[in-house]
Amino acid sequence: MLAKLINRLRNGYMVYHLGVSFKEVRFCAKVLNILWKENLIKGYTKTNEGIVTVFLRYHDGSPICTRLVIISRPRDRIYLSVLDIARLSDDFGVLILSTPKGIMAHEQCICKGVGGEVLAYAA
Image (cartoon, rainbow, N blue to C red; front, top):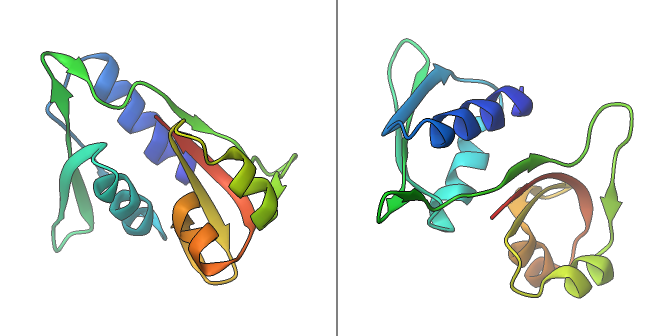
């Protein structure tokens, strides 16, 4: 489900669409909120029928988000502790993690002192 979301966003950026639409899945709103707070997308809207439209962000004709990658997969999950996340947190992009306290960006994980499974990377 997260893979479909990331693939739709990546494909939309590759062909310079202003927005992409898809059916809402379980935690897509949380992932989209993280991307919005990090200024990688302009925003998103939900309709009553369960359709989410994401508005993509560009700067001088080139996409802001140049890299969207799924890190953990069902066959090989990647877990990081708070110390590992703190070591990786040098200005490189945004890690989206699933923690016991919910889905959050790597900076929030460091502030709250929790580690978790690395879901995706965006830059």
